[in-house]
Image (cartoon, rainbow, N blue to C red; front, side, top):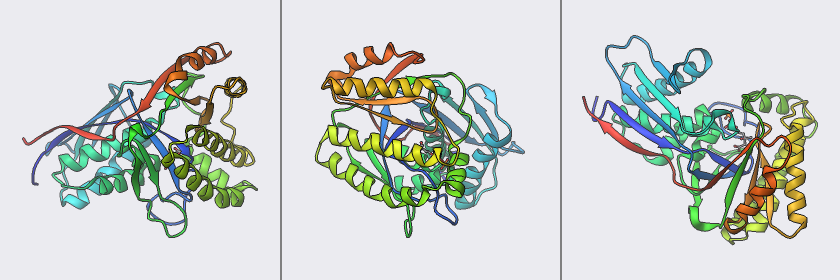
Length: 328
Ligand code: DP6
């Protein structure tokens, strides 16, 4: 094995402005539609991977607790791909921590698999480019491919797409803050993967989503590149509501009363002339997109919404990076 045996990487969650919902048929966890997100600063996952000849099995320690079952199997699947590429059979110890609440509705799987992909590639001594690391991360959780890069990032999807992730604009391209309205401390009831599966299998609106999402992605991309915050916000809210409408028609409901109350408050704020927009992922938390100068006043309004427990504020930030790499 060449190079490092141990590496630590840091990655951040991302919030999709153009939502990924649904998978293309076939291998590789390639999305059915293109998506576009913003990587967030201020909240981090830090993951260390050590390939250790003395281990008989991979070990995964998540937030100080030994993980078993599906979370461990998903980490081992990623490590198996890295081992195959590096031509090694050595098992690894993975230690991962989040400095934000995992139930905050910020996709911890995105930052988690981005950090795990980068740390394990580097620890295995592979000299991969960011797009290769993103391809590996996508196979575990598609949104994780976007967290490999900083700023505004898109992920290909749909017929003929390879599921490649690439940066579209730098973090400072748009004056934007994300207010994460935490509405429950519980983990989500239906995972994104299961929600997508049900939507594709039974939503009467699946074909409409497939037809609309690429246009929506292209319009968001154009508005972003034009620096038009209000248009990005408007289209992002529309993308989220279209995704949820399609999922709801399959019986998959992520909204709680607090989600609806916060959405109403975002819209009331907008009616007063303040540009504030909502986006919601596979959980009841609402994320509000605002300009930096409006963040404090909008935050104050959302804090008084019944059911909003607390608010985290994030700015666009950096992609995944290696913080330490060591040979034995
Ligand atoms: C609603 O990336 O968690 O957050 O690929 O099955 O792991 P898997 O799904 P995941 O889905 C994220 C869905 C979303 C929208 C988005 O982030 O684009």
